[in-house]
Image 1 (cartoon, rainbow, N blue to C red):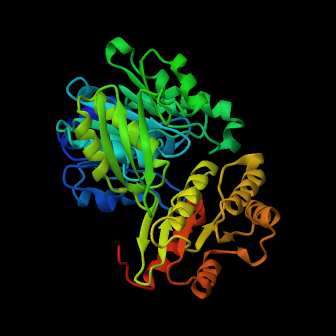
Image 2 (image 1 turned 120 degrees about the vertical axis):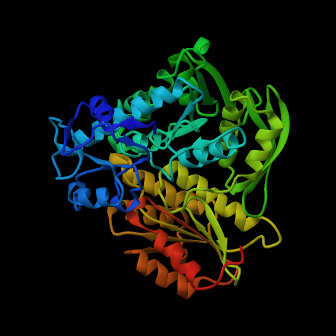
Length: 483
């Protein structure tokens, strides 16, 4: 963040100084809500939580080097105290947003370019690819993992300082107005729209409602004459239709040659890594991705559109994409044990679109290369926040696994959605011993230890709340990895 005195911070967040002997003292480091991560000159965010109240750690944060605490009540150490009618948590989060907005406004008046990314799936993977591309052109700040909500978004914004050339942000939503609110904190010049799927369908009610909310990003962009750019997925009709909702210049990407940026001659290797010719209005170049899954082609094209608009040439963008590795944990993380068992850990989160993509990548790996015909295992847990469509969507995934000829499916969970996925698989293929329903991750681990053979492929995927990464970690801990 920019350097600010405590009195200036208080003015920005409309707070009151308490126990501050010298209001001219400056915040010279970042804002942290974990007192263990405070560095000298930082500002501690005292967030009240269900289990831990940050106010209880205020004194420790100051002792660790924080110059003050942003809090909802006096804490006996230097603090900026804020209030909100909805309570202490809302007060502190609102203040964090105001501070982030003030910091990025000053930076954007200089040389900072803000890029926003949204979509029902693929935000984090695309954000990581955009960061890899833009790092060839300057210093980049981007969120770790999927830090994309009302806390993670402004926290990330405040990582940017005078040395930052690009700020790449994910924007998520649990309801209408959420993306607009995040975009107001750090107004993007470039907006990337990936897709409109069924993630959070239970909260939005329909894909059309999801599309309307996702379009808040392109509606927030500046006009074309002011440099605004909307990057739209031409393969998704609901995204392509967002061109009518923005005054920014529009660039499309997709699989069809009618898209401004598209891929030709897409080929997948034995681990579902794509190679293709990237075609752009500025020329063409070969790309060989290190990330896994054919769905990454579209993500890479979106990232290329950002790099090209930021002044990079096609060859440099292609080289950056070809060198980009997975940067966020538990997302298509492919590792092979010494006995040849390959574990695909994609357990960070799941929705119907991302599960379909992961299953397709799994069977591509099983059928490719010298080891074609390998057995494939899909260890799947519940996909959360699908509302009334949950059982139906889980049934569809179970049936898809059978249609794709996944060798074995292990469904983890005791709820109706998990039972729906299992029954879908059984009814589609009358699988018998090819489909298993187990109550929890431990049961899945036990089954895999008994049944997995050298050379098998194992995909692990579910919503984060299920915690299925323990399955992947257990499998990998049993033998050393070869790659």
